[in-house]
Image 1 (cartoon, rainbow, N blue to C red):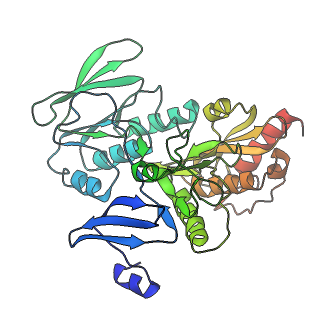
Image 2: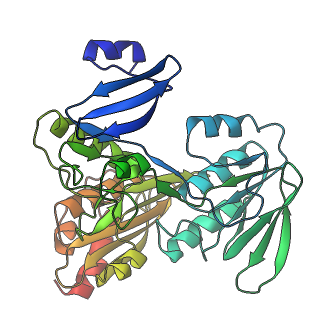
Length: 391
């Protein structure tokens, strides 16, 4: 939406403005801007302060040409490096780190990803699915060092190398680096909310209820700065996804204006695309199911996006997860060269409507050889789990 149209919607936008203090008893906030200081009275307050990079304990992070990747300014700074960078090291193999690695590699930069955990994308997919993604990225020329700790960024004012240590062999080596991108997670920005008494939750975000309201009346929080609950567990989880943030913002905005709508909780649907390979996940992965002590049964299949007798089909791997005691759908992962995102959306809808393996197996999917098979891989994954569940 163009900024010049906001006034017609009664939105007074103040850019380049910092809120310096809030007096919640008086329902007044104070701000500083290029035009000077001032104050606003409010009836309701919504915190959407986001998150900041959580820097790891690595020496040399204060050098020039060492970047985070959270804001538009971060992205502009990295884009300016294209054409004058030969070697880039990405510290962190999560979603943002891998997408940055692909972007630099596609511009002809020699890229190495350093990941502390045994596989990349482990907050999103299980190790077997991550291995498929790693192999695909390596085939396209990306260097990936897993189970490896970055220890120091050497050089004077700018990077020269990144010192790393293999966590299994303890071997230490150095990777040439002109620039370094640090993508090792974030922490919510909660200082201002905490200063007026907003409760900070166990995940370090501003704790909210189903109205997206904090423990303070008429004070709401949304997006990366907030904590809500998981859809299945009803236990605290952070936001961290744009799709979640906009839905929370809708709920908070309506309620702040006097409405009464509820946020259903976070399922956690995610998708990315690396060198043409779609990687999608929703709900529980095996690790999070263990953390929340949910015993699961999985249905895992390797299939094709089109019938075997029709040219042009792509390999696809589908895993769906079900709570053992009830057979209820609680998660799924898909890796393939096409059609992963829409299938993961079907799984997310199934989770939100608490369908079982039997329900998913009974789904009547559409069929045309040029598009999809008579038995969609989603359905066959449900059948594999249904047999194990004996339902």
